[in-house]
Length: 379
Image (cartoon, rainbow, N blue to C red; front, side, top):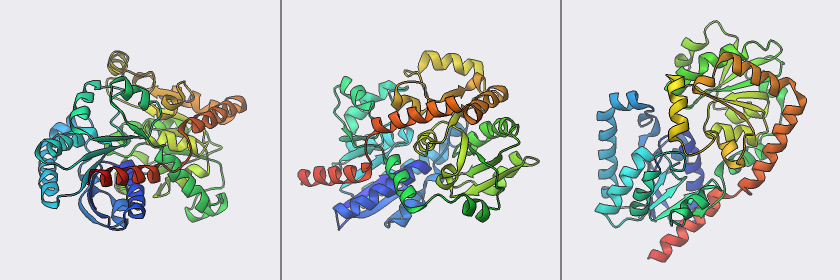
């Protein structure tokens, strides 16, 4: 069968590539065409557009690139029609993907499957109407989403979380070796504070400077920054000049494997950090912090922004968002997770409880098996 996949960021590229690998196991005649990244390309098929050409974040960047966004959307729609796949698989990235879902559902007879649900339980709950109209099957990776969607009379498939798969696979193939990691990356022998400042330029610009100021206080540790896919070393230089910090690219999991603590911008990275059992502080800067904090209380439907806390249903890690993300607050929280043994152990124990809630590995395989089964039943 022919599969058309659409992702809009690095985490989507990772999870879609793992899904493609499993689809090939379930369907030996699988063919792929996609909007995606390098990891998906490694699985074969034809890449139409790289996700880094799609990833605009925030009102102003989106406004400035509207012409490009519309051109990419037009290209995608025309390409789907030309390719005539057996299914279109959308991966997160709702602003773009829900428009594609509407087009495919109203203009073709191709089924639309959504893998990694849009986070409408946090905000924009009205999008449930579009999902009901334009998405044939939804595959969820977060356990609390099941009750949410069932409450809207929309059945979904909970398949487990693919981040569990990714971390387990990495650990199985990469035994811990701190000495080799530091030697290969020209690092010191000091314990590491990891900085995960986001995967987009805007996130890095907003979060990294204060992260560096906060973490630099801890002289007994070395700072190591996880370079994001698609972001050049040159882009980071304007923010790290004069600061004792090293960048490692394409080694985020290896970095987390050897870190004592981490400052993490909210997103999938918070969950990955927890799965590696690294104590963390979640940091997310926004302009007009007090205004955003007020709006967050009024607009967001959830108490937390980090996946760790959302899955656990309680505050495991401290979230410093908008006006609470200050250098002093980051330093205070980082000190606690580094030096307070009781707080560290409490966080690690809560990580273990959250991991049990997520369930066992095998999300990509379960999803592929179910997708192929559903597609065959249509025929």
